[in-house]
Image (tube, rainbow, N blue to C red; front, side, top):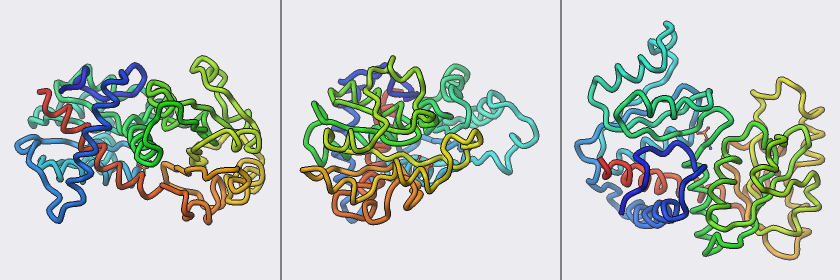
Length: 306
Ligand code: CP
């Protein structure tokens, strides 16, 4: 079985069959990660470069682990300390790297569309590890994997994405992927943080947690991106927590357990209370574990298509 595209640039337009294939392949790789020797040979002889032009902890480490678990040779690139700081363009950086015979490129970039551009100028497979406020497909895939593991199916699952939807690549990829897989997706946040075009994506919008919590099976709580709040979209962190903080007290009012996801990094007691993040219905650390299996599945499926 193979994916229809040789790149993973986003989940917009990716078919349900391809998402299913990635999720099912990740099940086998999760089993590999539970063995005493967590290494398999499929990408032996392949070289992968991780191009991180923006900071990352989870995604960068998770991709590198996934690549090494699949026996690939790995090269890490960080924009600081590279020739990017001397004015080199993305195209020239990528072409120079490719001249060193790289098979696959994983890229995180602050500009939406950077991975798409790259896929047009290099011959390697390109994987988007987050581009601006556009898409973060492997994050959404690991979120879907974690939800499917917990709830058995995504079909009909009611998931609300809470918080700063405006700046969120995680929200966009989750909306595309979850809707394709038949989930009922909604969003909740302050009006200033919900993009006007959201209605085109066909998701109901809520502005009060109290209105949506009784109607969902899972809440995917987004990080308040403190670095992108230059426009004063909410009065203060305390105000934000008061109205949109997902707390144990709020969630416990529902008549059933609600699964709590967060892509990380967490601002504790801002968008989510510490007791809820560490509580029995939180799957935040399972998301991190599953991220390695999902990235192994994506790398394996794309790497085997060459
Ligand atoms: N979830 C996520 O993308 O985290 P990092 O920014 O640490 O990679």
